[in-house]
Image 1 (cartoon, rainbow, N blue to C red):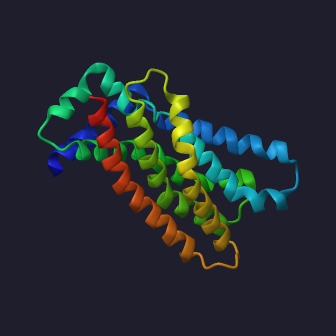
Image 2 (image 1 turned 180 degrees about the vertical axis):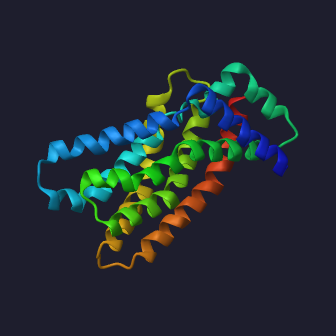
Length: 222
């Protein structure tokens, strides 16, 4: 089963590299939001650095949505999903492999690039490191939550708007605790580890519930 999962992850990574994937688009969209907000706020660097973590996290949430509608839809259109459904491997393993591959091409690059983009919102070194760590811990929760919506809209053409409406409210707790953890690292009244552990718990819960819920939705759509 581990070999099957590795093969599925490798397949999705190769497809993402071959067709361009959503990783590059997510990074460009992430950069656009982070670059445009300072122009709207003006030259107040103190204000910008204070709300910088929130800007980065909000940009990451929106950037994660890019390409999520194609997570299962592409396989649904070419018939690959039917083969995966009838394969001996459990559907939960298929979902887990595809979500991990999507996170490797979308969530992980966002977390790694966040310190560089943090320069655009006047973050100091501590805030940059905390933001990168919280994104590394929290973006899996965003991806697994999005996978449930992607599974529900897999058979709907142009279901990206419906997907966003479904999953954005469920991403709000991850956004709240991600920003809270970053602010705590920059001198907040709450210890940094408290919201970080809650954020980690949200990712673990989303991984379990999201995997089974997405698999159930794909079976139901068949």
